[in-house]
Image (cartoon, rainbow, N blue to C red; front, side):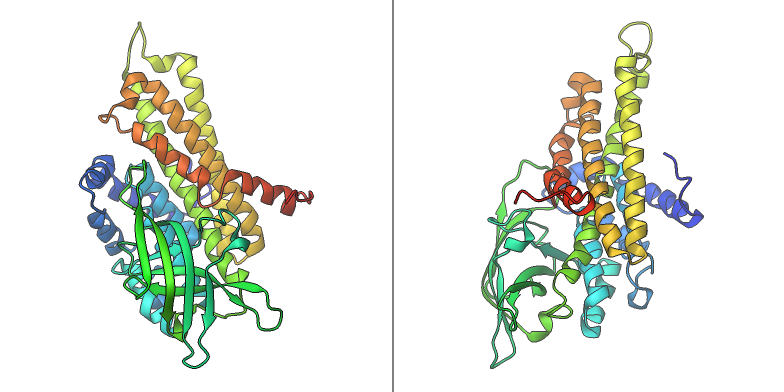
Length: 388
C-alpha cells in the first residue's frame, strides 16, 4: 500500500493503528459476534491511545485533527479485520456536528466522552418512507410555547447501535414560522427518554452493531436538546453527512484490503499443478485490478477528507460522494474475487471471507445508494436535468 501522499504524522498514525488492529484481528471480531457482544476491549484500547477522538478539538480531550486522521484509524482497523462501525457514527457524525454547531454546554457534556470512548452516540436520519430522500423526512418537532420544550414524533429505521449509545442524534423537521415550510433540525435524545422506543431488526449481516427501528411517541425534550441554530437547517445536517460518506469509504477500503490480503496469501501458497495458483493470470489479474481499484478509491477519500478539513463543504460534498461510491464498488468486487480465489475455502468459517459477502454490500446501500450518488454527480456536477 502506497502512503507517498501522506505526511510523516499520518504514516506514523497508520502504522500505530495497524499494530493495534493486528493485536485483535478478525478472530476477535468473529468471537464477539458469535457471543452477541460488543468490541468493548478494542473500543477502550483505541480510545486510550487517542484514536477515537483524533478528529475532535483538543480543548475537549480530542486529538485536534480531522476526518483525514479518523479515516486512517478506521481503514487500518478494517484492514486488520476488526473495524469499529460506531466510529462512523459517534465521533465522525455526532462529534463533528456538536463540535461545529453545538452550544458550549453541549460540547462540554459530550465531546470529552466521545473522545475518550466513555460515551457514544447513534445517528437517526433514515425513515421507512423516505429512504435516501432526506427532504421527505416526516419526524417532526414542535415547540411547547408554555415550557419551551420540544416534542418529537416520528419513526426511524436501520439505526445502528442505539442499544449501546448514550443518546441518538435525531434528525427531525420544524416548521419555519415565516414560510410554513419544514426545515431539518437535530436533537440529542438520551437512550432512556420516555416515549423513545426501539425494536431490533433481525439482519443477515454478521456484525456486533445491531440495527434498530425507532419510534418517537411525543418525546418531550428540553430546549437545550436542539443542536445549534434552529435556522441553520441543511448546513448542520450535511456537516455530519459528508464525514459519514468519507468514513464509509474508509470502512469499505479497510474491508477490501483485508479480503485482498487473504486472497493474495492463499494464491501464493495454494498449488494445484506445478506452480501456485497466483502464477496464473486468471487469478493474478483480477487481484491486481482489485488493488488498483482500492488505491484509486483511497485517493478520492483522501481528497474528500482534505477538502472537508479545509472547510470546503461544497467541494467535500462532491468528493465524499465519489469516494463512497468508488470504495463501495471496490469493496464488493474485491470481496467477490477473494472468495472466488479461495474456491470452496472462501465459503468456510476458517478463512473468514464468506461473512464479508453480505457486509461488503452494506456500503453500496448505506448511508446513501450508489444510484443517488450518481444522481448527485449528474445534477450537481454535470448540470443535467432531474427526472424527479
